[in-house]
Image (tube, rainbow, N blue to C red; front, top):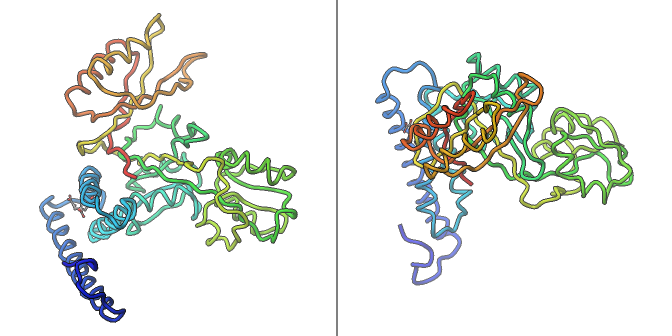
Length: 368
Ligand SMILES: O=C(O)C(=O)C[C@]1(C(=O)O)C=C[C@@H](O)C=C1
């Protein structure tokens, strides 16, 4: 296929559009052909019961990494190319039946954006009232997977999600990183009228400096989600919500101030939770929950095996164990998959020093 720069004489508009039409015909034919091969893969997997049995996150991660490798010359960004290919895979998979994905609703939350970024639009989204319910619905099999926020680059860990893993049997089977832009949504025409600002506590925290500088007198009211904040703001002239752009469309609000997050690289990380661990994709992380025996140097002994095996630790966080006063569990993230030999050895050794080691899951490292 030739590129515009290969042409000797510049083409006029009609000729250029003819080229685009020809390319579109090829793309469409190839997408249909790809969809037929995806059906074939489905058949090769044998008679499976539900859409969830056809889903292969490790394969999807490999396909998308190849997309990025091939995209070195642009002109579209890796993020755009990945988005297009995710949609193609989403549509191919939905030929069996769309996946059912639970998330913290209502419609218009960043969790919903994360769902669409990771699974594409050919899914059935299930907006749920709480993070607790997302875990419950996946455990009960009413949702195939759930998406829950885990941490924000400026506000830190979402404890209500992390703490669920202490008792939940569910596994982490994916991570999603979402750039989060917060906007001030309102019916009102100017800032002077605004007396109350609704948002999720995490979002209020991400816009602290902006609020102090621009709405110092307004009352800040924490609600269960940004979409709920937008729902409340649509009923009053003296109220505003901090939320994403999708919420503005859904709840019919104006964006009075754009991108008011204090940090321009504001990013939220989500976990995909499911009922099983998937095979390695070649570039994975493993999340573990560990508790130590009460003796000097216990934490050091717990972590040493990972360093000894050359496995890099990307996160450690302690949380109250809820079994006794001043007892803690540690959430640890290590590069590698639970089936890797070095990880098997490290987990086995750590287990000798730990009161408990629970594998929460292994999953492809987030793309883009
Ligand atoms: O390769 C597979 O196992 C497929 O089912 C095909 C395919 C794809 O479209 O590439 C579709 C869904 C899976 O989640 C992974 C990949």
